[in-house]
Image (cartoon, rainbow, N blue to C red):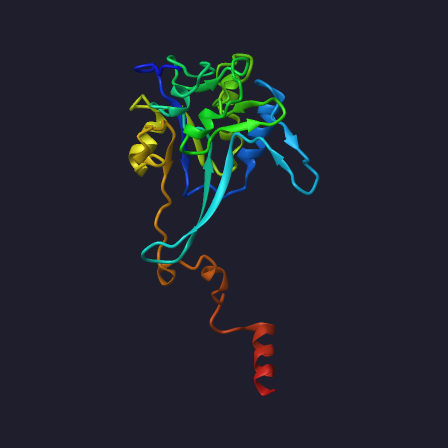
Length: 249
């Protein structure tokens, strides 16, 4: 079985803003494209245009309608991928050592040449973040685009995970969550970022920013009100004459 490092030098991960995510799936498509064309074995599809399509995705977006105790129901879009847990059970159950957690940055990876496709890591992961690639018969998972973030041939602006670079709403953030002074750590502190299923004891590195409470409908500002307000109380000129004619009808 693979051993987890006692500590890591950094804790690279994602912070996902559930208040900002619009569920457009741009991150899903970007992740699929990048990881199919670059790092590791391609992410395969089966019967993609048939009656029962299936495929391998490292990032998925689920949508839920949530009813708060007060106020109106909210539609929450929930992106989910590997959380790169500090106590990652997917690593410790791996019989070949294919799954491992890096000491230098805390990223959890799979050495595909050592993976035998037994699926134990998928059973151990409480988040369903691992997927068996049916063509390659190996387990796949989010790599935090390790081939991007350290690639000095890319412009500095592109040295972040593909999903973060692509998100049109700015709902995804990347950085070192082990550094309290990093932008992502400050964001988690300011917005009350939370772990996904903390009761599982996996200590996920990735954090979620909860949706902000919505105001009651009667308290919301009507953004169209200034545009619908009359320009003048008393019409003059042609419009004034027209009003008088219409009043006689």
